[in-house]
Length: 183
Length: 191
Image 1 (cartoon, rainbow over the protein chains, first blue to last red):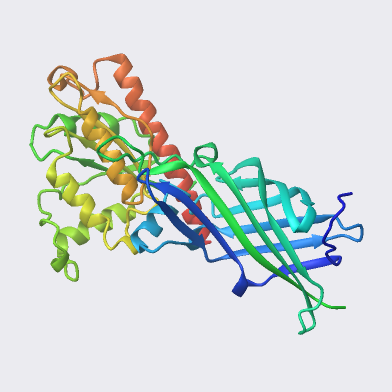
Image 2 (image 1 turned 135 degrees about the vertical axis):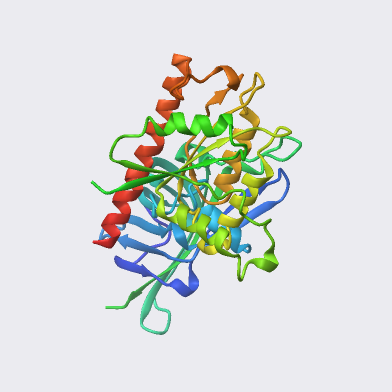
């Protein structure tokens, strides 16, 4: 059983959509970062009586958002996420370790385009046992970097100079606020 | 089993086109239960102009309707100056607009090509696959480069090289397989 410096009250926490986000960024043109997000997702945090924590998340692929609408359509197309055939991205933690001062090390199964791989994410967790409105709240921030081609996201456009339009490594970041009514 | 329709599009306008012949060779390989329609309206399409988008005209409407009615698109392209013919690019540009509701989205597409050179329109095919992907299509990751096209067809419009004929059959099979998945998915949505 992981010993946690931060004690999260047991129970099932639902996510607060107003204060949560699922984003990604990827090196673009070999230079800057291109960022996007998913508007439609769901996440639950479950803490058992012994303090063991599990995180589960589902992202609706066709809710992908970027600044350029045409590009959002391209990202949902078979060139990238293929939302028609693979409408969801899921994550299920397999270990959830809280370290000193709320540092997080989480392993979990990430499923994208029907490919499941175990990924390691790091971040932090915060906890407020009473937000003053009758709820306990937990904040979870996690980040990991995956090779998109391992999940079948193989778009390989290149610039006239031969550099890739988008890199293979993609950083996924979730900033989730969970809430549970006080008993 | 849900009905499957394949739309054949030759990138060449020439009456005695090698690519139209290649398309005919591919059509012969389609299973009996698959409907095949050859698109004949490429030359009638006006040049793409955003100003014309509110009323693009019957030729564009016909193109979009034919694409929308098919679960698979089979393109045969010649190669002009290392790329695809302008009229073919023009058609895809029209079909891809407006991007939010394009008929190209998730449309299964395969690309084959013939040329009288030794390269068999291989660069044009690569460009066409890129363009189709950018337009939102589900592009089969295969190519068929028929070089020295004037020597490659028999009297029945079949490819004389067994290896090429086999590769063509594999491409057609891959396209039909994807088209059947889309047709089944469409039927499930309607039920």
